Image (cartoon, rainbow, N blue to C red; front, side):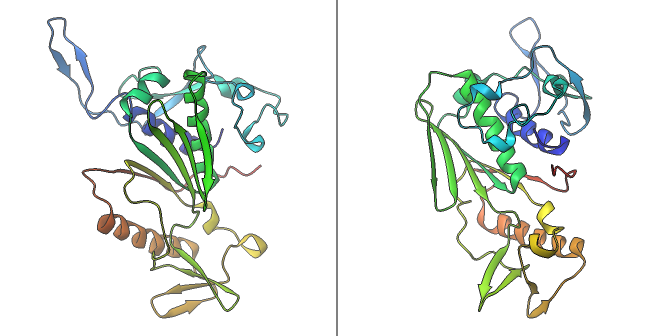
Length: 261
C-alpha cells in the first residue's frame, strides 16, 4: 500500500458508503442520537487482528508493482493496521453494503500512481467481498473502468498527474498552468477523488514538461510550489464552473509523503 495520506483519502471514500454526514446511533426507543461530525483526517494507525481486508494473491487483477509481499517485502505487520479517528469509531468495512449503497454510481480516481494504488485497493476489497460476482475491466483512451454489473457500480481511474493541460508545440512539451481545455472525463461522475503532487517535483529526464506557461509568459522553470499553486487554482476554478456540487462529491488529496521504492 501507499503512504499514510493515500490511505486516509481512500478511507474517506469508503466512509461515504457507510457513514454519511453526522453519525446516528439507536437510542433504544426507536429514535436516534445525533453526534457531531467526525474529522477522519485526525487519528492514528492501530493494530487489528481482522486485517488485511484482502490477500493480494486472491486479487487476480492487482498489478505486480503493488504486490509488496510478492515483490519480497519481508515484514507484514503493516497489513494489520487500520486507521482509527480520534473523535469517533468507524464501522468495519462491508463490501456488499458499499456496493448496495453506491448502486448505479460512478466513482473516479484522478491523479498519479497514488490514485492507481487507491483504485486497485478498493477494487480488490470489493472483489473479495463478492468473489463470485461478475465484473468487467476495460481501458479505453486512457480511462480504466472496473464495473460490477449486478450492482451497476463503476470504479474508474484517469491517469492525470498534473491535472492542467500538457500540450506539444512543435516538439516542445508545454505545461499550461492556467488551462484545462483538453478532454477530461470528469463530468457526470458521482464521486471524484483527485490527487496531484509528486510529478511537480521531478527534474531531468523524469520531468514531464520542457517549459511552463502562465497566461502569455513562458518559463524554463519556476518555484515548483508556485507552479503547483497556480495549477491547483486553475483546477479549482474548473471544478467550480463545471461540476454540480449537488450531484457530485469532490475530494482532493494534496501533498503526500514520498512513496518511491
